[in-house]
Length: 275
Image (tube, rainbow, N blue to C red; front, side, top):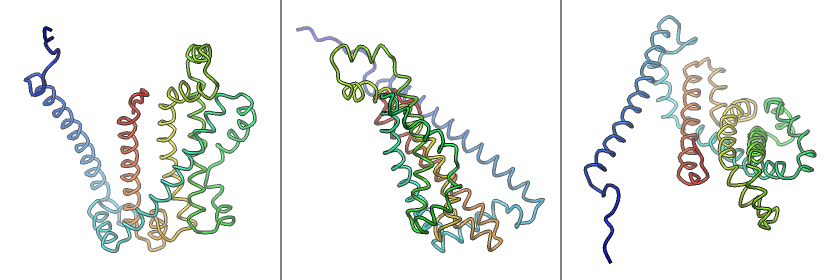
């Protein structure tokens, strides 16, 4: 048997080395662009803060000092942990409930007709409207915050999943049905894989809304958390604490979204997820 020469660059070849060098250079350029953008933003913030007192607009240095103070007190760690637990639990519940509902609504017309009025009604009511009721019904414990985040997540996930199901190519469905696949098999083998990109998008949007909700929920009914930290800063007239809380919320949200995107690319790439 004649050995067939391998096609493509071998590992460690000059072509492969150049490709890695180009990829590394591209990553470094992206990082440099991000750092430049952040540096310009902080510099602009510092210049503007020179015109105003700390109680109105603290400078980056004053905000940094306030962050160090809160870190040494353990306030930042406790707040991040508490808020993260509430966000992740409520978001995960919204995902676990919203995806099946969206799939069923998309595949079964009778379920869509039954649930559509309720989904369309409640998804336009902001979660902050239910803060008082959540506290009255569930108390000031963790349940009220988790339920509010679940509420803000479930309808976004449902709508995106439903849109994904309705976007599935009709020829694919007909082909599967003509081969004798049951409705459940079609749902599992054809509809669900095609809907995964929509589910990921819904999950990302729901995560963003969870951060919007956690602040209002913690302001009303929490002693710990980033929302509670921002509200406590107001009571003490510590505007720099407010800025610390806002910055941490942004960084935490960015981190959660990046982790979700990395997970989707690594484990769901075969479903044509592009995030």
